[in-house]
Length: 444
Image 1 (cartoon, rainbow, N blue to C red):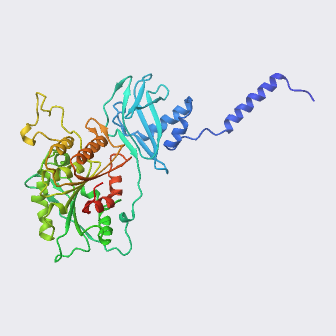
Image 2 (cartoon, rainbow, N blue to C red; image 1 turned 180 degrees about the vertical axis):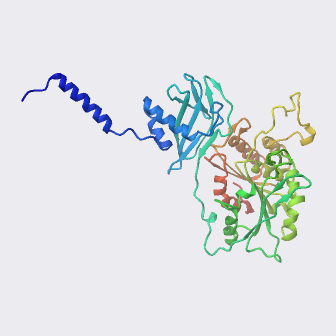
Image 3 (cartoon, rainbow, N blue to C red; image 1 turned 90 degrees about the horizontal axis):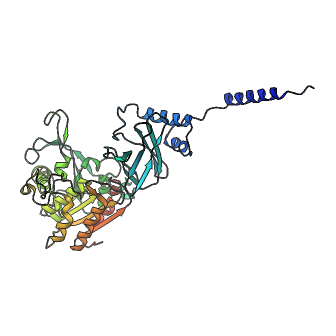
């Protein structure tokens, strides 16, 4: 048989390669952040890889008009282990150096996608981790965007947070929307009242617990009414009526075209005003219908974030009304504007309007200096992945609160964890907090 020439052999090899290329399927386009993360693990991305990553992110951000300011929200994908993936997408000039900077000295260079001017990054984060980040372009740090933080945390609910067979259920009533006429005139708010099944008008007065941001505590996971049902039935806590109150809002049209939330004005202004608002405007409605103890040591105020610092403000300034505080991720930080300091020439708020101590950042100093101590029992909870921004470091400020309470001899319990700025951990430990706070001798 005649042997093939060298030229024929080369031609056959070329055709074989072309045929193999045609028959071989292209790498599947990434469908989620995990796929993108695997793709971007390569030491260098091919043009095809870059194209696929670019198309993935462009599809996710097709409604975003401007990706150059760092205001766009990151992408999140959770994993079964409680952690998850985070993805960032940014627009700059081809050749720019774009970085992502986060607290605790962390930084991640964004990967340019060809000469498109688009940059991307995907990172995997473990359970109980959080990131508060900012973009940096060629060494210039951009302001933190509205969505510049995320975290991963999950908790198992204790039996007291789940409905149990044979436990009588209390009644939760959604009250008519409340319109303030005195302390926060013009505001309207939703609220609910819970009455346990064991409550009887003829017996001893019930205890009281008030929840700030109340709608988040009487619905969904960690429902406080279920916790109260279980603990009261087990006689671990006394019969307690709960009042769940949302922050006030100014309806659209009263302060412009859009609805205006009054939460910060109510919760972050550290005066007696909010507690007095409750005492004079809302609680009389509840007192009129139910027998409630008038002793401050029988009243708890519970809240998270600014609601937590508001709870402490209520007990501090109106100790005749509230003697117990439960604070989750409390915002004991400095909410003052830069022009609202006594040492600056432009003081937007006169010192005598709110007094020299105007934000919850100052409570540790007040606690140490107040003598004799006020009659307040305090439960604090926070995680070391809480916020760290221009208002302060939430976890460190909760540590300052705990240290001050310890120094001055207050009865307190500080539960520390690794969660971020959310009420999830607080809701998970709510059963323990309620049992502890009603105990008569329970120093931690």
